[in-house]
Length: 622
Image (tube, rainbow, N blue to C red; front, side, top):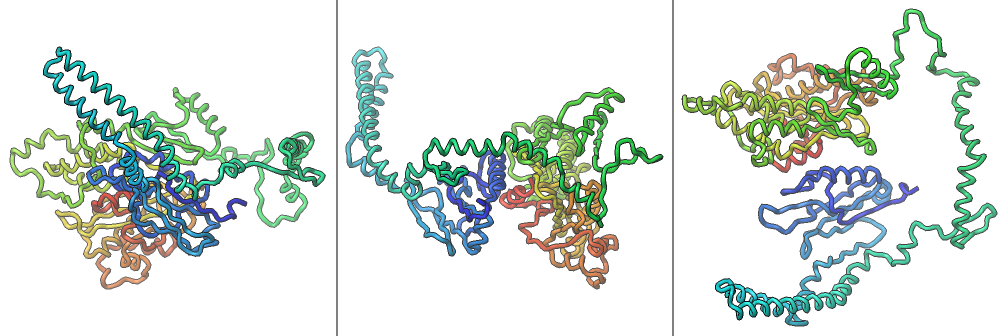
């Protein structure tokens, strides 16, 4: 019933929902952000539409420590939106406070009240303190006398007169500070409490009303009588639930559970549908003893001597481990938490799974002596372009690059990209092209990746427990390679809130237009989508996989080419293999949809992105 009532919750939540809601240097907020997201998911609350300032809080710093956050918001449930669909709130400019006031707009059942926080009263209280006495001046004067006495004492520490003067100045400063403390305590009881009442009466209920919440004041017994005495209410409440859950009534409820009414319908009714039932014990078909129904499935992922066991039947997994232990010498390490340098984190209460490579990244940084380097904000600096022209040309440059482990560093980063870090895929794709002729500029680009990994070594991919829907994004950067003018392709696929497949690579052919480059990138993404669709369909764990996989693209021309069954004179030069995309769209394997460029999640896989855009997309990746 509570879900059917319109709910609105607004104010300072002191927490952000996404990385894009933070601008500036901030600590690791991922854990608290995930808790906030889980809280809103459990309560069914969502953000109300807003207008005005995006960041609602600023730390009022103008240097490099300046920090902006979206801490204030208004949350509503579905019933609120159904009742007042046109309501929204506006974020105004902050004046006397570091928070922005929020104003609720639209046809709502109550008026909007704007109040000033206590911070607005600080100048008034400060002026009153100056008028009420000179205690603050006396404290400062005593501190000045003490500084003078100590400076004189430093010249002659054995002078009795200076020692006595130092003692007296300390005593005067202590007494003045004590008087100031008493004054502030008395002043706080009068001024601060009065100012607090002026600001807080709108937001807080009376004490008696607050204590009355979540209490039962009256109850109706089995005779229809209304009981108001608190002890009678308690006794009737306990008696009702004892009769409901205890004694013979509980036994009858358990007996009814074993009746299974659906079984009687199968026996007594004429059934037109196909019904599958378990075979009686001992009934087997000759020659088909090894066949299984498919209800219990187990997967064994092997790499050298490591085995990862996955299945949907705990008992069968236990039997499988027992059988393996009889065939091989093995050790059961329990629930999977670490395999091949990947740490697996599970939160069963929130139905979430995470993967990170923090330990592996730390080993890589230590191997290349970058564990104490600066922390980078981006894997690729915006505006930096690499080419073969930057390769060594003289013997001195060749000798300088001879002992630099360029290829080893690229290979170490490649394993991180393949497992858990799609945000570094584009940077690795570019730097890996110059392993045979790496120059100082190329090595600087590799160190930029390592600096970025040092800052983001604790980043991990997260998969939730929501609806399993596979969706993809494709993008391309036109003729981005400085050496051969070829374009860069990139695609990424999401499943259950996390990234499951990604790729960033240079195209094989030179595109003649941006539409052709986007069309080639979409074709590569479609082939990956068909493979994932067939693989997931065999697993039988994603019901929506039978529907076409949606691939989002930000180029209208490429989408039109994919949906057009006929060849066009402007696209007749495109290689035939890329027109496989049309066939996939025609038979319903994939569907091409439009997305704006800022919302394209494959954008960081094709070009260097600015920091805010990178943070926004990373918040949707992980």
